[in-house]
Length: 508
Image (spheres, rainbow, N blue to C red):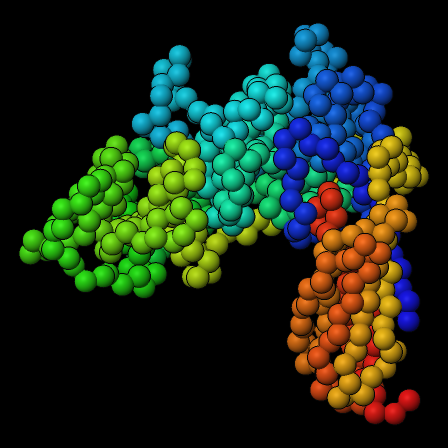
C-alpha cells in the first residue's frame, strides 16, 4: 500500500540561530500551518526589523483594534498606533507582560540611574539583543537571565520578544521565543516547538513578597504553586528553587524549608577537612563537614550565607557537560562552567521538582491566545464584530513566501498483512519540492495491542530519498489492525506525519 502526504513550510534563514525542529504542537492535529502576506501597513517596518529572520512568518492578517493596527508573526505582535509620536508609531506589542511575571532584581545587581536595581542583559544574548534593536524595539526586560527547568533553557524575557538558549547548546547560541504564536494561540494554525514556548506563572502571595524581594528572583526562581497550608499548619509557597514557609501562629517571618530533606535527598557521610585550592571546609558537626567551592561561598555570602542555605549535606558532584552540583539543607547550587556570569553559579530547581512530585505544580488554565481578536465576542461581551477580519480568516488562503518548500512523504509496506511470525517491511521516501532528500531523519511509531507503542528510527535516507525498516514480528490475535505513523522533522519546527496501518492475519 502506498501513502503520500505533503505540508508547505517556510525555510527561515535566521540572522540568529533558528528555533529547533522538534516539539509538541500547540494547534489541532493534522492542520497544516497557515501563513499570510505581510500587511501593507507593516511591510517597511517588518523588513527594517529583519523580516522573517527576526520576526518569523505572518500568522494572521493585519487587523484593527481600538485605533491600533496589529499583525501576529511567529515571534512577536507588530503594532501601529497613528496617535503616537511619529518615531514611536511602529512597535512590538508588550506580549511579555501577559506572562504574569513579577521579577525581583537581586540585591547584588548593579543600581540603575534612578536608584532602582537594574535588570542586566545576559552577555550571551547581547548580540541578538542589539541586532533586534535593543530596548527601542524589545522594550524593557521582564526578567533577568534565568534557568527554565521545564524546557531546560537559559532565557531572558523582554516586553516585545524573548531570547533563550537550550542548556545543551554551545555558549552564545540564541533563539527566539514564540511570543506571537503563543499569543495568537489556537486561532493561528502553527506548530510552535515546545522548547520555544513561553510560560505563564502564578502570582506570588503578597505575604511572601518582602522575602522574595530580599532574596531576588534569580535566587528563589519564579512561583510554581499558589500558597497553601502545610501539614503542620504552616503557610507554604513553592518557587522554582526553594520552598518558602511562614510558621503558624508567629509574626509572619518567612523562612526557607529544608526541601532537600523533604525530597528524600539523604546527607552524605561527613568528611574531615582536606585542604584543597578553591574550596572552603564547612564544619557541620564534631569538626567534620564538607568541602564547598569558594564560588558557592561567595554566592551565598551575598544572599545571607549559610544561615539561608543551611549546611552542606554532601560533596560537590560532577554531572558532566561542565556542570557540577552541591546540595545544602534548603537548596542545591550548580556551577555551569559553560555559561557566563551571572548564570555560572545558580540554584538547581529543587522547588520545581518538589512541586511536581507532590502534585502542587500550578497548571495554567488559560489557553494561550485567550485574548479575543476583533470579530470574536464571548459571553457577556458587547460590541460589533469586525466582519472584515472574520472574512479574512475564513476566506484567505495561506500565502507561502517565495522560498517556500514542499515536503512529501511516500510510504510503502512490504505486505498489507503479515502472519504473527513474519516481519513487516516499511519503506519511506522523503521529497522536498518533489526532489529526493538525502540524509533525512524519519521516525516510526507503531501502535501495538493493549495500548502499547513502540518507536523506531529509520536509517538516514539515501541519495534517492528512500529508507527502509524491518519490524520485529508482532504477537497479536488474528485480524488485529496495527496502526502506525511515519514522521520527519520540519524546518520551522515540529514534524510532518503520515499515518497508515496493516493487519496481523493467519490467513488472507
